[in-house]
Image (cartoon, rainbow, N blue to C red; front, side, top):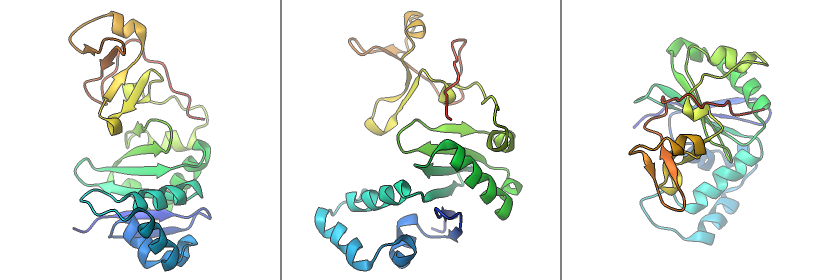
Amino acid sequence: MSIEAYWISPDDEYYQFTTTHFNYVLVNPSLFGLTSTTIKAEFDKYEEKSNIVPKSERVIIKSLLRKGWVKIQLDPNSNSWTIKYSVRVKNIKKKVHSWIQQNEILAYGANFNFVHSNIKPIFVYKREVEKYLTEENYTIEERCLNCKHSIWAVGICLGFFCRNKDKINQGGNRVVGTEFRRFLIPNRNYVCELFEKKNWN
């Protein structure tokens, strides 16, 4: 299946392709400061054979993100761009804004999901992405995904939940757990009166 994806280099050069990000690395290893030998050595190190993404692939991708590469892919089902990175937030704003301008991305009307390597995602609707990327004191939309009390733990099968004690004490059938009590957030568009902006800078 053809996909639409990009790599942005640490020097702000853009590479567009219609395969997976890792396949593009395999075809162009020197572009990423790698060699076929080093990639093979990573595969041999783990020797994984499964239907999920091999650990060797995840390790290589993460190492590229730590070096300043930015991984971008369009999800046609939700019409949103997922942007994965490890650089500082103010740097990613500059990179993404430049990428949007040079590739006329806003013409497609998609939303944006910013995924940092060690903080929870931040979701920005198409109508506000220009302000989010350019205005220094921009106030992000009040949604649970952007609240400092929410925890994105989908990757470890705990889902998306809130640890705010005031929210938990309100009770209801969405409060779960015994020692580790939490309020399960129904969807990423949900918001309550206890919203507090996450500091992303």
